[in-house]
Image 1 (cartoon, rainbow, N blue to C red):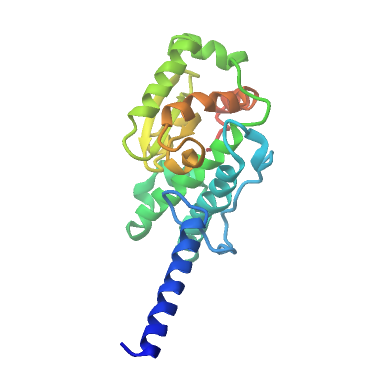
Image 2: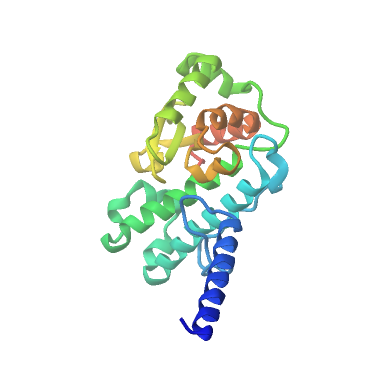
Length: 250
């Protein structure tokens, strides 16, 4: 091998090693791709969070919250706006109506609306039902409904966590509420939302790996237990009252 070839090989190896080191040190984004810095404008937008990314520490870490909100949720919004750009009916229809009647969505974009629309609705609910200084036992009408319909809070927590563990791969666990105020528990794969089955989501937990992996790694059970410390029962009661009044949308 000539001296120039040897030098080239060494330079290539050094360059490759540096690149590999940079990749290994880069922050990981779990499960779903990040969005561009400026997602396409359109009729759908990220909801404004009522608390900072670090507000749910130590139960959910700030990096997870930041990536979850600014990349994963933003990706769903960008996806919906991308569809709406070429299909006006998507942009002009309320999200709960789109998800509640997917068969009316143009077939060419139905899967995109299901995934991006479900993800947008799920996460909009998710941020709302959590908060700093929250947790503890449920209060008000929701506490009474959990006792009546779900066997009491202790039993419900055990059942809810078990349902979260049974989700194979990625998905959600929800509590739904009927027009009569009755509660039920259901799990969904991917970003499916109970609205797709004519059910109204009251609250729920995200068991996609991107929701917990940076802090809990593969310990989903620990995440499910820790999540109760973030549940804002005041907001859940507000959603419950709105659902019974027919005013809750997602």
